[in-house]
Length: 110
Length: 417
Image 1 (cartoon, rainbow over the protein chains, first blue to last red):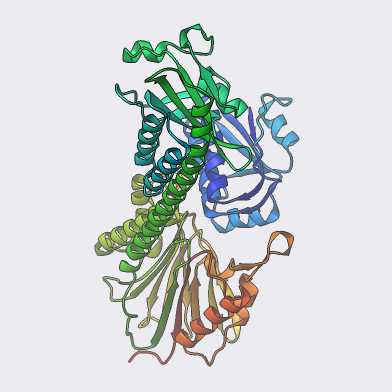
Image 2 (image 1 turned 180 degrees about the vertical axis):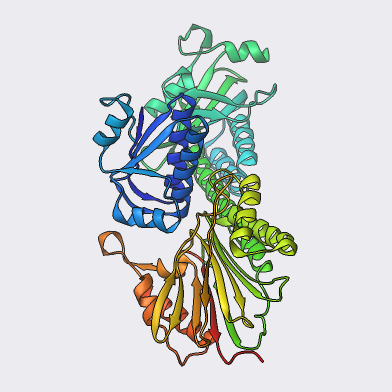
């Protein structure tokens, strides 16, 4: 299981960093992703693109992505954009229990 | 041995040469030419410091070519000089453990002696290293080091000028790219608003400083009804502008088989998905207005809610499908609204509602409520959009918009006969 914890604003440059990290983890054959969004203040269109791109890639390989600690503002953006397929949970712990993993391999993204 | 006056003259001449070159590669050649001539060495290399990797790199070597040499700071003779910031003379290279004979082997050159000096900016900022090999007549000495130090001061200035020049060129290139993106975008926007009895229409597209990917257009549907499309492509710059061009082309190609906003959204989604990068998409609103039947149909694909004003009240037309271009297949719904004939409709991109002022916790967005409050039954659509644009600009204290601002306003009036 891989964990991504982006921080700050998820705009153009930060989204590229997010995509690079996610791609690296996908190449390393991770199929279960927890994306903790608690540190995200604003999410731009490219941030959404990076997030959904990860979701799509995982879906193609029968993997799974769970977003946790999603700020209300981000939830409303996802809703407005009709992105209701994104699984959202309250905490990382909740996601860990779904993946049947007590913590597994962790990678941070600051 | 040169006299002090001769040395001073040579330095002045060298300085003139160095400061007349702005191209970095050419400058590296000139630096070497000047140093070889003045110190009377056989060959040499200028190494520059790559601060991001902590490596020295060289793009030139006199005589036999080696494309690029990279070595870590601290390693080898040049690396050692870059590390300590102190010049070095080595009289017998092959007896020095720091000397790497590999380059000799590659080039067939035989290094005897080495003079290596740092290129230092200000007190202690190392920009690179100048390495000279084999003094032509005799051996390198302290005079050579002193002379090289004097020369290095001019080299450093020339290097800084060349770097600043390179940055300027890059800025110009970026600027030109953004201009091109803006031109591409503008080309696909309608020149005029449609003239349809019973409808007053106005539109506004204010490009941002950092060109985004907003798009709007009016479509003449096969039934004679009016179609309005407003889209906001993710990301910025020329990439986003190209996607707006694709949306424009696909929409017009799909018009001949148009059935409904939802169907059109589904078709456009598939085409865009196939032709764009995996993380690119657009939010989009499609509206079909039938003035004769007095109804409006819309499909909102993950876009900001459209606002319909009726009897002084605002209602939102929220998304009934997801963004376009992101998923291979997607379901889009649509809604039909019967018109009384005196409504007003506003389509806008998030450049309006997310126009912001302030930083960090003090950051505030223009927001939906301010936008709704600006509605005024008495204003015609053009004046309405003027008022919104003015208020958004006042809210951001006249700062150039961070995102494109695009709006379409429609006022329904006397029914067409």
